[in-house]
Each structure stands twice: as structure tokens, then as C-alpha cells.
Image (cartoon, rainbow, N blue to C red; front, side, top):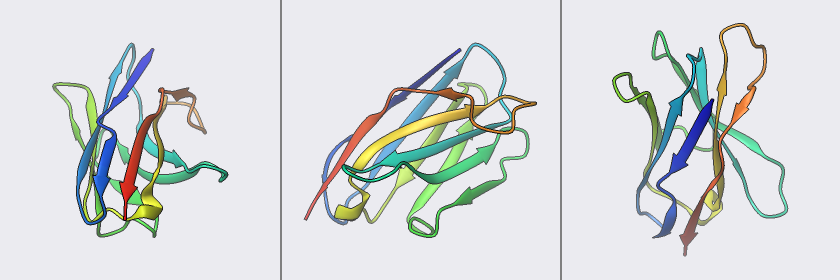
Length: 116
């Protein structure tokens, strides 16, 4: 099982980035994005159910971030618009297998830095 996150970088406040999470090795019920800022706990950002495309977001990113998936590419995207310095963090994608109650697979992080 592999989750490959990519797309991080440095962007000015108000800018946009798109993160990608390529999944391989098995099928998943849910893929989510989490982030961890320096000195802070990891927090949920967004997730998407693979079969229905139903999604949910943290309040802090609602209206600015959009999660989507491409079945053919087994890839989940996180489009991040109107970025703020507070969005600076290492972003991780994670997957939950069909019978799991928690996210049981994690990818490596990708760093997003938003300058003011």
C-alpha cells in the first residue's frame, strides 16, 4: 500500500496550490488530508468517500479548499485557494480501508508554506 503526496511549495498569501495523493495497493473507503503546523497537533483538513464522492471539511478551510478524486488515476486532490499564513503546515494524506474505523494508512507529508 502506498500513498504518495505531492504538490506542496511556497506561495504568497491569497495564492493557490493543489496537492495530490496517489493511492495504490488496495481499495479504500475514504481518503483524507491532515496537516501539522510547527509546534501544533495534527489536525483534520478534509476527506472524501471513494464510492460516493461525499466530502467533509474542517471549518477553518471551508469555502477555500476543495477535495476531489480521479478514479482512473486513483488520485485525490486538495485544491487550496485563498491561502493564509495559518495554512502553513506539513500536509499528509491518509486512507481508511473498507472495514477500518480509523485511518490506517499514511503517506509522507508535503510542506506548504504561505508567506504573508
